[in-house]
Amino acid sequence: RIKHLTHFNIGYESEANKVRQMFDAAFQAAAIDSEIKVEEQYPAEIRTLDAGDYAVKWAFFYYTKDVKNLLSTRHKMIEKIIFTAKDQGIELSTPVLNRFIPSD
Image (cartoon, rainbow, N blue to C red; front, side):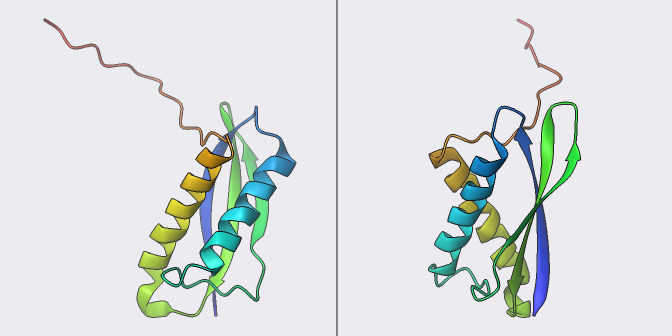
């Protein structure tokens, strides 16, 4: 069994309990998706890691035994979280600090 970690930056406007609910919902959706090899008998772990200038850095831990598909499982789990966050109105924050303006 491997404990895997992903990070997400989530804006300060999102309440912590709603963020935790979103991660839980994404994990439950992943657990019933046969293409995502998470160990559903071990609950996901959700932690705050850092308070940055623009967002809170959250850690999402889950378990898998499928070493051969570790990267695929990670990508699919991240995608599940992105879609769940969007569905629940939670913005994953990456600030745009520069703006490209094309010249004529």
